[in-house]
Image (cartoon, rainbow over all chains, first blue to last red; front, side):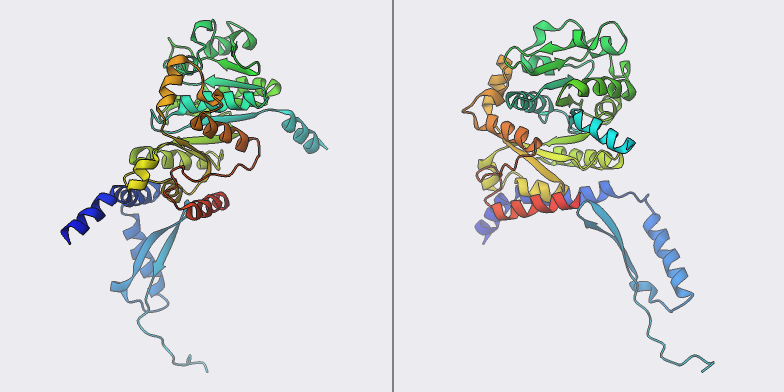
Length: 89
Length: 280
């Protein structure tokens, strides 16, 4: 087993390089100043909470790579659907 | 009607291609000399410009160092005519060099000066090929300002790939993109052993269009020692790699053959080449 792992490791310096580069490039390409993600997250929660109830602790905001472009992905779980009819009905 | 006239004028003008990399020592000057020589060998009129003012080298790589009288700074500062500074290659009638000044620095010329010189040259030449200095400062800005197209040279190695990514981003932001990529110094033995990034890996990381794969080859050192571009050696595989780049630049479809550092995954490579092209 140790030999097998050793073989995998030896095979892997190019893989290690690729993985390290993948992370470095995401960071290098990011145009957002540090702290912006946290601010964005808080402000998004604030705005959305005005209309629906948000499960604050599970909100996720991340930058995804799409070729050379980046996209901002927000995953904002809602507390639960409110199915009551509006009062004017 | 004016638009039609501009288009016609543009069609008659040569293409200005800048070769750059970010990182130093990846093979920009060698690539410039060889791509220029290969284009001239195909019968195109080519002038290459050394934009590395203060650290000129394109002249020695081409073996033309003894014939320099004037340089690009002399042209810009009006001490000579453009024609007087240009050196004709001793092997290829259609190849010329406009050398850099050796005793000045990058601030001796501006991006505007480079644009003016290249506009003038593009009237008479099919290709103006610019050898950019390393870095992203003034010299690099001078080199990319007049470019119609940009070729980025990288090596299958972390720092070269990282710098290439930065340059690709700048080129896009300057609206000179999409840049095309040459992966230089691929060593098949190391790739097959899993100890060198394969071309497909580099393409996947950088997501740009590939225009050349050049193997690592000691013969490049020998040809540089002699001042004779390897692209002119008919039997050399590395020379062939540079000739292929020249043909792709002229619009020819030249396939990327196996055994060139693809890591044995030609399917993966060709898929990535297409994706890179579409992303642009």
